[in-house]
Length: 485
Image 1 (cartoon, rainbow, N blue to C red):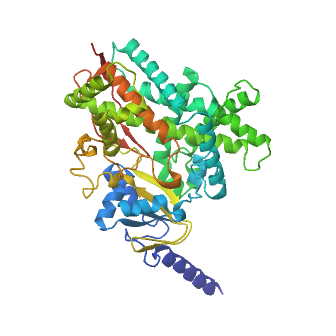
Image 2 (tube, one colour):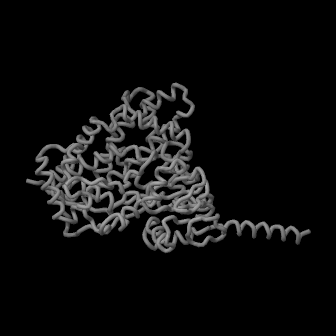
Image 3 (cartoon, helix red, strand yellow):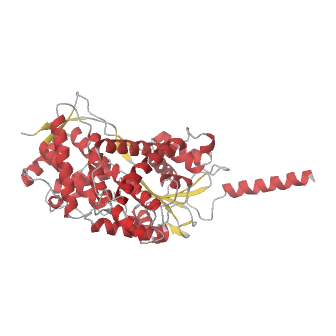
């Protein structure tokens, strides 16, 4: 009897192991799978070797000569797509609109699968439509928003003017300015300076924690019980609590009519009062978090890269200033000026290509079996989109590893259509805040360069190599902002 039980157990274990390492029929090429871990060890090792998961996976795709890389990370099927055709298929196909229902996603969303960034199905469709509609109703993406950005530009220039006797780190001013514009539409008010700094520090630390914890905490979530500190779980849950308190405070003010503004929180609370079952305070909190995370770092990082590039290239900086000075003089910039400042607009597009802020977009959850580039991808597979590789594809861009704004200007001197650029995604999951990001980047960059020459300080030229985690960011640097006569 005992031997029979042992034999059955061995057969079951053997069957499980075989199933665990056998790839589905016509699955994309990729590393060999091992029991329980899949190819997690290979991915972790090559990502560490090349400095980021994006670059590590790109090397694996080259090694296997494929534009559809097939992986298994512990028990999760993961496919990474490369090339314009495949990327556009995933961005626009309805079967790719799902989001993974993983522990890590729930942790990102304050413990529940809510909000609009990481939900799908009817909840996502209803709440994304509501969010976009009501933000537009209160002026998001319209002339009033441009005036708010110009007001923040004035605050940035005042800060530089008061502190230009010493080197300035752009990170001390840019994320706060973006957040103030965004928070006005979310909560109807600017954030107090002390609270704003705390919030930005919290979001930055949270982003780093997720970047560090993303692998094993997502693939082996039970490790949080054994090593809560080492896995990053304790840090993330603590920061989630602090973020919740900040958002809850804003909601309480609206409930007590302290705010009294025409803003997103007010609109959402009205829906709750009308007993719409999907509109809850937890959902409101998570959407607010989605908006804060989306706007807190990505837009400001593009600007930090833009200032870094002109800091490292004096001739390029003067060429940009000459165009700005010739076309605008001392006039405060507006988004409409982007069509007249052709070289400046081309420069900002090149910044977003060369320093792709989200080089590995996603994740998407496949809602039905699909064929990509001839490979059969099973339903429920997680799909990652290698935007960064398209932005450096030599079949699309001449000399892709050179920084050349001219690539976005045609022979007539007009701005080219940037159809192979995906800084805000594509399709129905395209970033809803792209109008704020585009206007903010253009107006602030032009407004600062119009008034100041940017130079490196202490004779040290800062590195141009980015730090690539969940998003790309410049290495910390400071610069001298010299008033133009």
